[in-house]
Structure formats: C-alpha cells, structure tokens
Image 1 (tube, rainbow, N blue to C red):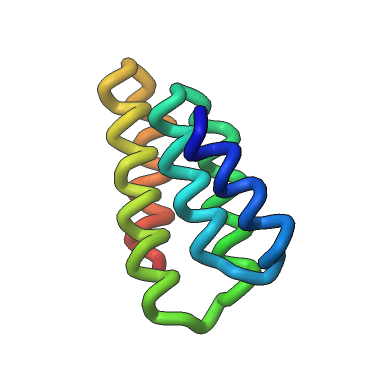
Image 2 (image 1 turned 45 degrees about the horizontal axis):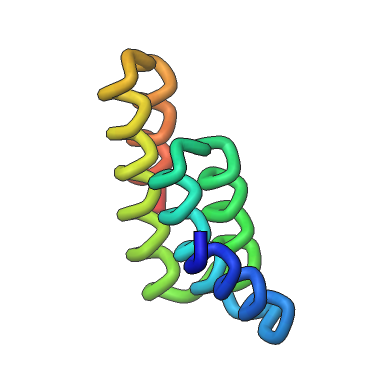
Length: 88
C-alpha cells in the first residue's frame, strides 16, 4: 500500500520516532497481518516507554489487535491482547 511505503520512508528518516510504528501497526492490521502489527506496537513502546501519548495510542492498537483475533475466532489470543492493553 502507498501508506505503508510512505511510513517506511518516514521510518528511515526518523528511526527513533515512536508514532511511526504505531501507524504501521494500524496498516498491518488492516492488511490482515496481526503478527507484524504486534511487532510494531512493541517497537513503539520500546522507543518511548514513558510517553503518555504513546501509551494511549498503543492501548488503542492493542485493543484493535485483540478485536481482530476475537472476530477471527481466536478468543484465547484476543484475551492476551486485551490483558496487554489493560497493563498499559
């Protein structure tokens, strides 16, 4: 997707920007690649573990990831991500 290409280009120029992986996670989830989405959320939290804004966005992304698993019949995996979201 064009958005994916643009964000990867942005990441190359701003490798320490934690919002880029969160947006990439959204795109990967929309592309039905939840494993990549999860990795991007983890990258964002690692880049700025103390940012309240990153925590809010990551919480939302984790809930979206959990919902993806729930609606695709993986309730056990969904619970893992709902619990991760609650811990943020």
